[in-house]
Image 1 (tube, helix red, strand yellow):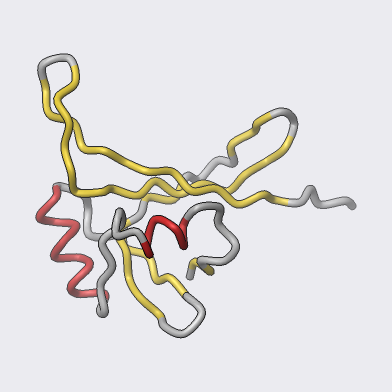
Image 2 (cartoon, one colour; image 1 turned 90 degrees about the vertical axis):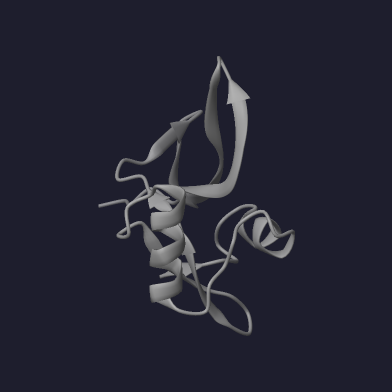
Length: 103
């Protein structure tokens, strides 16, 4: 489960309507199929007063930027843009800073 307050920009993308949200997992899986994403790329999101479902791909490896590690999700918008002669889906990226574990 994703906590929307922990990921930079996730709450803004949801409230601005850039990321389509769903009340049930089944609805999110149907939407994922419609846009060409696998059904297993569906994640539960805990917001302040509700729990919703979105289509998101979790990166298994952490992103390293300037020596800091981030947990990352890729979110499809469902919109397309013409790039190099082909239609490509616009995706958004949200990150969460991961504290280094000391042993």
